[in-house]
Structures are given as structure tokens and as C-alpha cells.
Amino acid sequence: MRIALVAHDKKKDDMIDFAKRYKEVLKNHQLYATGTTGKLLNEIVGLDVYRFLSGPLGGDQQIGAKLAEGKMDMIIFLRDPLTAQPHEPDVTALIRLSDVHHIPLATNLGTAEVFMKALGDR
Image 1 (tube, rainbow, N blue to C red):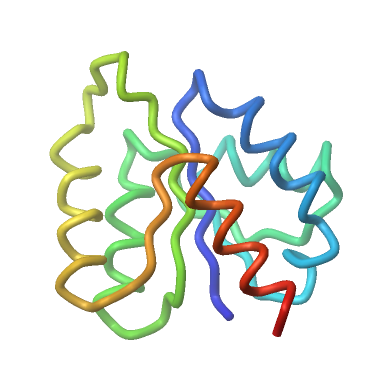
Image 2: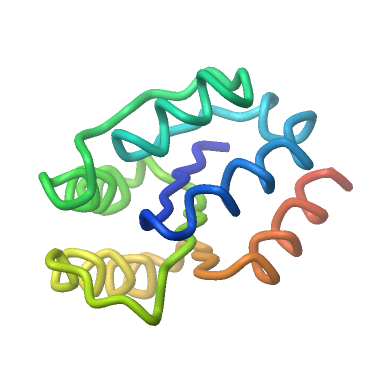
């Protein structure tokens, strides 16, 4: 599967811990991420990740474009619901596109873990 991994700044540590726990599942899929998240997943976790731009610089929109083209199968987007994001319209657009195109989207660790357990059982 083609999986996008995105994390707001205050959720990057959660994403790294998550990726470490599910590295054996994730490494069997094509991984994509926004800029800094992808760099951390590559350098700290050791995953091979294609990196888009940083979210505020258009990375969320790049993922949305792949999704709209049918080239993304799942998104794990650990959002920070307590901090205002300057690119919130891009985040909202990505969520809307995932709904329009029926692409699974996890916006928190609980849902992301359910997705990984389902992929691990395949």
C-alpha cells in the first residue's frame, strides 16, 4: 500500500514512537511523508520514505494531489488539535479529499494503531 505519514510539530515524537513500534509493518509498504516528518522517520526510525514539501509549504496539498489521482491508499496524520495551524485550510482539504475518495485517514494514535494491526494481519 501507499501510505502517507504526517505529523504536526507537537506530534512528531508520537509519530516516531508509533513508527518504531510498527516498523516491521510499515517497511513492507511504500511510505510518503511531509518534509520534516519524513526526514525524522528516515534518520531516526530507518524507514525508506519519499518526502514531499513541509506541510505549511504545500506538502499536505501534494499528498492531496496523489490521493485525488488514486495514488495514495492510506493516510496517518497525527494532528495537534490544540494548536492553531497556519495551513489549516490545507489540512481540511486533505481530510475532505480522503472522504470524497474513500481513503482511510487516521488523525490520532488510536485509529492509526487499528490500521497497523489490520495491515499486520494481512
